[in-house]
Image 1 (cartoon, rainbow, N blue to C red):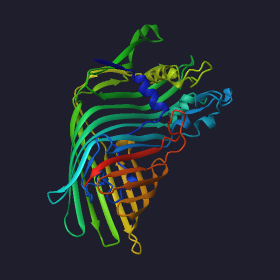
Image 2 (cartoon, rainbow, N blue to C red):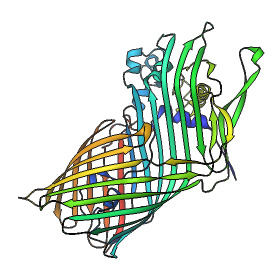
Image 3 (cartoon, rainbow, N blue to C red):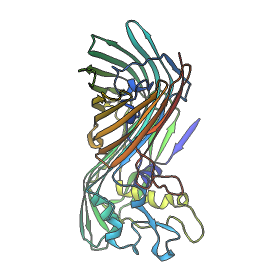
Image 4 (spheres, rainbow, N blue to C red):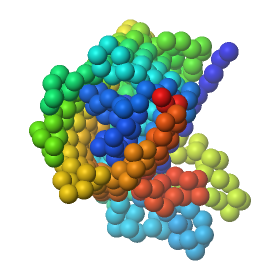
Amino acid sequence: MKFTYNIKYILFAASVMAGAQVAAQTLSSAYFTDDYKFRHSLNPAFGNEQNYVSIPALGNLNVNMRGNFGYQDVIMPNPIAGGKKMTTFMNPYIPVGEALDGFNSNNRIAGNVGLSILSAGFKSFGGYNTVELNMKTSFGMALPYGLFEFAKNTGNQTYDIGDVSVSAMAYAELAFGHSRQINENLRVGGKLKFLFGGARADVKLKNMKADLAPDDKWTITGEGEADVSLKGFAFKSETKEYKDEDKGSYEYVNDVDVDGAGLGGFGMAVDLGGVYKINEDWTVSAALLDLGFISWSNDVRAVNRSKSFVFDGFHDVSVTSDHGESIDDKMDGYSDQLADFANLTDEGDKGGRTTGIGATMVFGGEYNLPVYRKVTFGALSTTRINGDFSWTEGRVSANYAPLSWINGGVSFAVNSFTTSCGWVLNIHPKGYNFFIGMDHILGKTSKEMIPLSSNASIALGMSVTW
């Protein structure tokens, strides 16, 4: 069976939606929640009081988005329609100051989706053991302020746009974990992960600049490349004529084609962690997660061979027209412009490549209230190391266990993108476990249920226990 996708739609979604980023994190708000069954995903040294088997595909679902700009900064009410219809920030009737107010010098989105196909944890071999089969998908985006300023066309004749970076990856993970008590104070753990690559795509545009030519066209300079690792993948190109007839024609990438499917790569990763109980009141912990790589079997590359080319510029297209066309009907207008701006030329398959999956460092400290042992307070530091999509977060939490079979907590965090409040509820009587929580409480959304701020989180799951 042959599947055809349009790379322009991917670029459009990246510019309008604010997507996601690699390697799914589990629920950080639950780091200090005892007997949260997937606590070992945050630190492999943690065990559980109960053995468990997750309900297939429903054991642990985690969706997380983080960003310092979002839908509300790109899609705005159309002033000439009385605010009843939507348009983009590029609309000439929206003042420059208002249109660009929501953008930063470096605009980033980070998010992920993780799904546990099957997970089990059990006491044996002198400690606690876990076996997991997980699916992880991701998307990351870093866009400079200059790109939005140029798209708005504020009246300058020269724009120093900067660097654009977009990355996406999908893979399956088979993980085996073991943790054990070394002595009364110290517990250690580790996981060995086998990674099965589905797809990876990286697009980078470097040192992009735009200069207005005498014929009111833009001369774009810079370097660009796209690397895609996916079985059966190929770029599709379109032929265009140069404005200078003496130069003839050239080809540029505007579509992609995927014929067939299969394993795109293989890799390995490890998690390492430790928990040290200082005394009855204080406990500290640390972990290094997802230290590993995937070796991909192919690398289909497209590059910007011409360091200088002519671009017509970005033009606004209303999200909803007078004829009732939806945003879906307007995709082609935006995506054609983005494909022209990228101006990539197919170079074919360059062979395999090896990429990291992004590592995470975690440090935690927990204080158990001496006068009321059912309450603890925690501080958690998380650092994601992943190139352009790196971020840090500090989170404090208050945790409460009113009964032996129910506990949870609330948390507050400050990270590289925003501030957030989180919560978790963990119900774990004998025979059953259910948890639900958020690292970022969902705020206002669009009609399409897209978070206006691009920050959102939800995690939930069910398991059988004994």
